[in-house]
Amino acid sequence: MIHQALVLKNYFPKRNKVTIFHEKLGVISFYVHEKQQASFLCNGSLIYCNIKKQQSSYQCDFVDAYYVPFNSATCDLYFIHDVLKLSLLFFPTATAMPEVFMIIMSLYEGLENLSTQQKKIYLLKIFLYIGVFPENKKLYQIVMQEYRLYSKDVDILLNKSLDYCWNGD
Image (cartoon, rainbow, N blue to C red; front, side):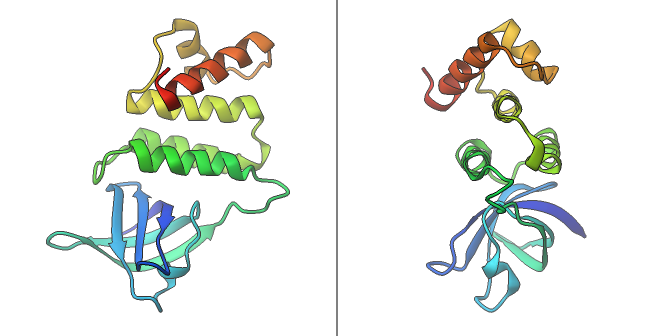
């Protein structure tokens, strides 16, 4: 069955391996033949794919990239990099995370129009779902209600919270 996924890391040409965040299977890796279309996928691409579980690995029968967010004039590549890094570092392997997948799909839908504050909120929302989040009632309220009014105090809180999440400080 064909599902959506986010390409987290393409190891080609060093290795013919691709790591994806699959909507039903979570973070998985599979190997591809160098001539197969998957070997040319960009990190951060949204794809449709048909993944089949083998005995101890996965095989991808079909791949179709439908969105590549690398228009440097409209996309924040550092933000995309942070989402990919967060996914690779903190998401468990082969564990479905439908809420987090929906958050990432939601941020991709409005990627070109997100404010800096909204990007921080999305990152914090992902951290919240994976269990790395400071205990702060106001921050929780801001993140869960997708607070969109800019204020210097809110921005300071978001920056401190992201620093805590990334570094544990």
